[in-house]
Length: 363
Image 1 (cartoon, rainbow, N blue to C red):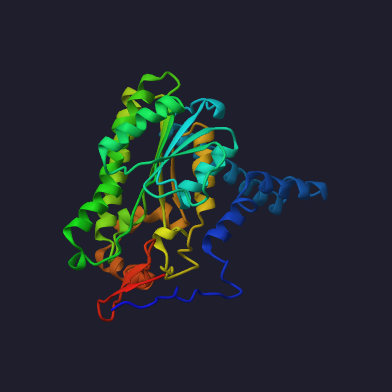
Image 2: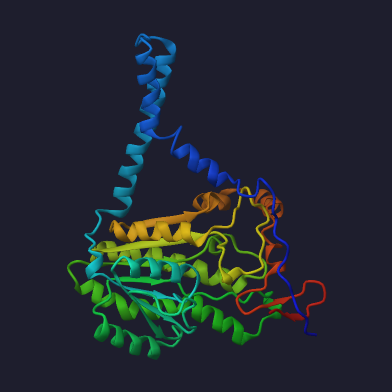
């Protein structure tokens, strides 16, 4: 049965923009920032308060603790990711898979406007048409012959790639029992195997270059949590997360000039998960692509390796697996993790009805 399917109603209220991430961001730029923390004892001193007064001692202790935590965080990042590489945008050639829409398109357009050379690989035409500084190549990244052909064209037209952003992904959004084998194969080929094709194609040139390069892997928090209706997607994302960590370890030993950036966002506000509503907008807000793009661009610009997790729970999700299994089950139920896909429509405008299993065509 075919029927028109409209977008599920979105929660809309005065407190809709409020989330735990917003509060943390405000605190990090105020109460938990060293500059602001040290203003407090300076204000006390301006009021002629003695150095040994209790409020003065408490404020100095707090400012010292915050400053120490920032210093330790900087040391931790340096130990984990090493020294940054030098980046000159006029010399960078950035390859983005799945860059015709969503997060990939946003990153491509930003770099194109800033003077970098950008190549977008996608089977779909770019949503914005032509973009300044961006060259579109029609390419199915699940076909290694097409990847090799396009790589040769990029080398000829734009130069040797220095940044690879593996961003291509699809979401089938069905229960495993409802999926065809061909759909499973397509999902794993796009979400997992294509990463190996692009890495094997573009990484050798970065390895030969003294200036190195940057490899960005866009994974998902679902790869660590799993979720109903996402067995194929979760398996692939878990695979590329493990692949990225292993690759980073290899490159650290053999090619330390290459930087690696792992991105594990929660639900993104892109067509990939069109129709899905977050079960808890306060604790698990939908992430805007522009926020993730800012973090990716910052890491590439500064030549840093990085692990980017958004929103807040995505940065702490590994602790979930430490919890007792019973508590994990309670957390999943309270979070609504396994019912979120019931309203999924997707990029292609289709979804499965939970009620009768009928495929409903959307427009």
